[in-house]
Image 1: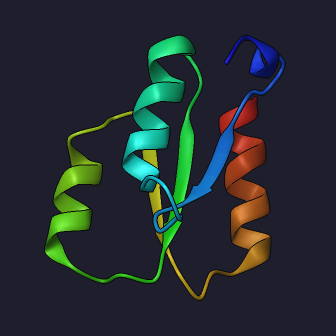
Image 2: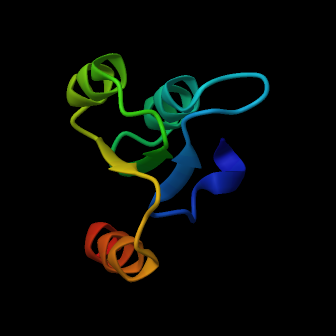
Length: 79
């Protein structure tokens, strides 16, 4: 995680091969507590929304995502 010290915002998907986005976000946040995380998912289920709500550093967005909106959010969070 030290190699990511220059990263101001982490963007990840929820579904990945070896871990989910919450696991990645939690590990990144533990090392970089001042850096926000944007997680994108196609799963519209209450569990995902509830888990995201428990993590104030995490900004959940659903697919299909408007890339102009994502771009604006990243710039807002990175400022």
